[in-house]
Image (cartoon, rainbow over all chains, first blue to last red):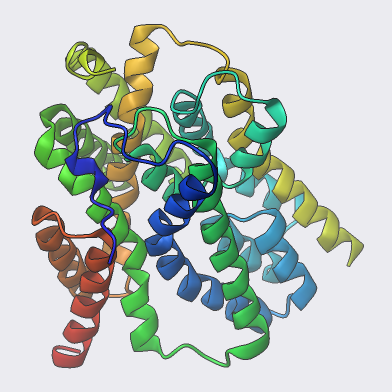
Amino acid sequence: MATFAVTNKPRGTQSLPPCGLAAFAAGMKAGLPIAIGYLPIAITFGLLAKSAGLPNVISALMSFAVYAGASQFIAVQLFSLGTLPWEIILTTFIINLRHLLMSAAISQRLPARLGKGLLAGLAFGITDETFSVAALQADETLPPAFLAGLNLIAFAAWNIGTWGGLFFATAVPPALQAGMGIALYAMFIGLLVPSCLSERPVLVVSLLAIAFHTGLRYLPWIPSLSTGWTIIIATMFAAALGAFLFPQEVQEDA
Amino acid sequence: MLELCLTILGMGIVTYVPRMLPLVILNEIKLPPRWHNFFRFIPYAALGALIFPGILTATGSIPSALAGFTAALLLAFRRVNVVMVVFGGIAAVLMWQLLVG
């Protein structure tokens, strides 16, 4: 099996094919763990939406046009509770607002001054998972075709899984569902830990983010916020503190 | 049905705009070093925040989630392929459920 442990190489190494079909294929390959993680979750989403009485075409449309895991599950719940449309839309906005940070970070990793249409197309595929895989590539500049391949396999898995849940699956065995629930978290760990081992600032920033996020969720004197906000706040504070504490380290190889 | 469609459309728009605007606007701008440095830490900070404490509730029971967490950490420390870390995490959760319940 191919290696994805690209983070073992120092930043700035050029290891991805520069363009075209080879870069696209490399992106699809790098997106494989995402597809493995997305399929069972999307099947579960399809099943859940069906059992909540949402029309199949609406659920399929949601995976196609919204394409954002957590907010889709919450939307199904809100639909079945009879929540007002604008409240569902506002909730979705807050949950997915964190992509602002990811989109901004990726903007600096693509070749400068790409066409607006291409950027707008690539932006549609930004999720926590595609962002993580893309951002942790060793290459300082990511070929747009790589991002396209990565985004496409993840998007395809999410939509195929949704259809599977809507039209084919009857039920996912609970034991298997629980096992699959860990998949994307394990992928995040597999991506993050090697970088933490090779660069101390990365370790410090990751631990800060974990500490901030845990504090925001569990400290009693902190007002309870939705996960959408706590992820944004913890990420921004940890990254800002990292930029303050380690002004040179990361710039040297920039 | 129309209301459902419009709601989905609204959800799609409010999800897409934060994904699209920074990429389209900032791609042509070379950010000052301090901002550049901030954005370079974003992936690691985001991963930390995404992993914890969310992972504790990923499987429906904290002990089985910790089993998966530990297995994934151990494998990742050995720098094995990400796909293997994913399968290792799943296997640990399934085994925990099979053996412990």
